[in-house]
Image 1: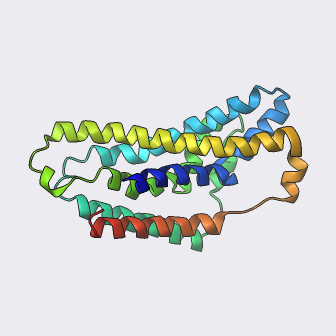
Image 2: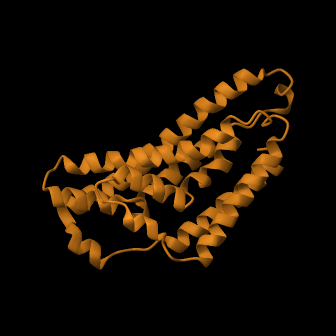
Image 3: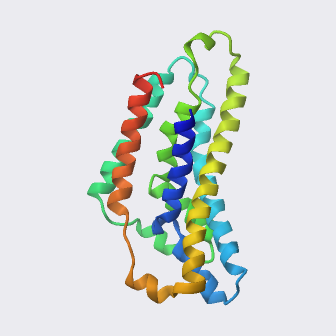
Length: 216
């Protein structure tokens, strides 16, 4: 269980470091407005969009009435979906064109769409289902209402924890570049995590399947 929660946190750090999740937009917004307060505001909007995307993916799984009966099967299917998403991103290396059409001022909307398009929320599903796993000797004693209540709460906690880690990681990078390094440094040292991102989805999906089949 501790390992799963650390996975939630570290995946958040990883999303925050990835430029594709939007921290360069926060730096750009702050430089254009020429206000120090614009940077945390932009990061807040990115965090909001990311959080909504995480909840949009996790919440339907938390409300599955048949989660008790088909827990392992659902976790395996979730793992397969994450692997397929990773393989798709490995094959299709082009970024979604619709992201470029979103106005820069709508950072929350952009962050939501980027997280959905890159499978960021999907990455959390196998981890989340592992956290919500039910011990075999408890399945006959838990009322379904209590199960749903616990799972919905867990979905919000997982999404909030992940988003906080993402915002901290991206915020540190954005702050360093905004105050000290500048966009010129960013243009010279741009790093692309597309391949690493896709491979990480495959690894998380494989981990989710392994954990489900081995009772973790």
